[in-house]
Image 1 (cartoon, rainbow, N blue to C red):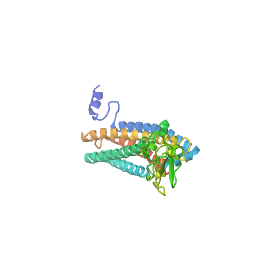
Image 2: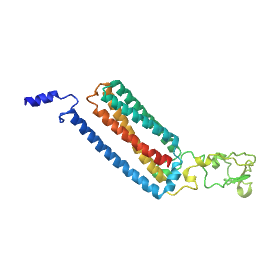
Image 3: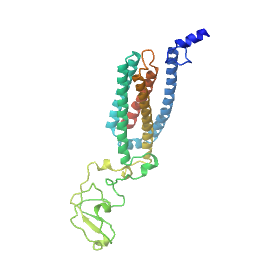
Length: 300
C-alpha cells in the first residue's frame, strides 16, 4: 500500500490515474487520434468514390457546374489553409520546446487562418445562394432576381421591332412585360392597346440590340440550352463535400480555442504537450482533405 501511495503521489498532474507513465499516455493518445483520423478518411473516402463514379459516368455535369465556381476564392482558401497548417506545426514545435509565447502566437495565427477560410467560404456560398445555386430539388427553384434571364415565353429579340403580346385593357411597363434588363430598349413608338395589329402593343427597339457581353455567363443554369440533365447533382456533391469539410474546419476552431485557453493558463510545456500534438494532427488532415477537394471541383 505504501508503494502504491508513493507512486500515485509521484504522478504529475497531467498524468491520468490509469496510465503508468507520461510516455504511455502520449502514445495511447496518439494511437487513438490516428484511429479517429482513419474513420475520417473512410468518411471522406466514400464521398470521393461517389464523386469518381458520377464524374466517370457523367463528365458533362462537372464540366457544366465547375464553370460557376469561383476558382480565385478556392485558390485563396487553399493558400490560407496551407499557411494555417504551417503555423499549427510551429505551435506544436513551440509546445514541445516549452515556448509558451510561441505556442500562443502559433495558435492565434492558426485560428486566424481558420476564420479566414470560413469567411471566404461564407461569401462564396452566399453568392451561389443569391444566384439560385441550391442543392437537390431547390436547384430548380427560380432565384428571386431573374432580371438577367430570359423568359422562355417571350419571342427571341432581334434588330428592329419587338412585338410583345399584352392585354388590351391596360398598358404595361417594360418591367411588367418581363423584358430582359440586358437589352437597351428605346420607347420611340407605343401603339395604344387595341390599335395595333391583332391587339398587340408594338415597341420599337434601337437598330441594333445591345446585350451584355457576359449575359451567357450570368444566365441561370435552367435557361442554358446546354444544361445537362440532372445538373443539380454536381451541386449536390459540391455542397455535401465542401460543407462537410467546412464543419470539420468549424470543429477545428473549437479545438484551437480550447488549446489557446490552456496555453494561456500555462497547462502545456516540454513535458506535457499531448493535446497540442493531437490537435495538430487533426488540423493537418482537415488541410489535406481540402487539398484534394480544391482541384477536383475547381480545376479539373
